[in-house]
Length: 218
Image 1 (cartoon, helix red, strand yellow):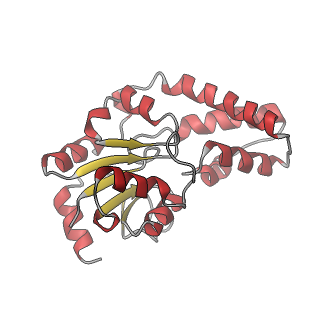
Image 2 (cartoon, rainbow, N blue to C red; image 1 turned 180 degrees about the vertical axis):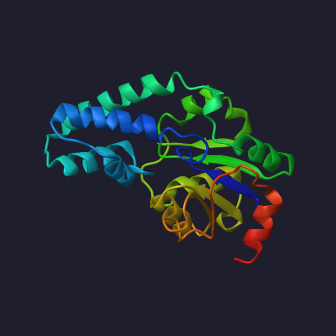
């Protein structure tokens, strides 16, 4: 029985990956090395602090902790300047319709994201009201693939983990869902998200009935 659906934010509800990439690339350039789209794939579903560590590893750079904190803050300031200008048009196709279908059928909804800017983004795209709760980077200590964000979401919703379905676009997120003993729908390519119970290209045309049918055989 599906009691709740928990959604990652970036790449699932809205595409903010492009803004993260621009901001990280600008920081890398300032530090004297290039940061590619291929490099950016390693940051999917990863916290800001861990993302910075990966970026510095790519550039072969080492800095004391206080300088790394300043770098992370600078990156976030640039990123926030982009997302402050977001509009509802940036919601990925089919997401709002699917969320409304879930809620009209009594299925609880949660956002489970490592992003500390998740509440602001939901406000900008006007989807806050469609989530019962938000668990973001401000309320967790462990990054995916640790299942903390999803388990905390299930707990706050009052739904058992085995009755939750997670929607994720990142390998680390799929692993986190599995570690939480939850079913997982991957948003993207089966070649990348093969560990998910079901993989779909996106929410456009996707219905609750399809979700029930596809997961019934899992």
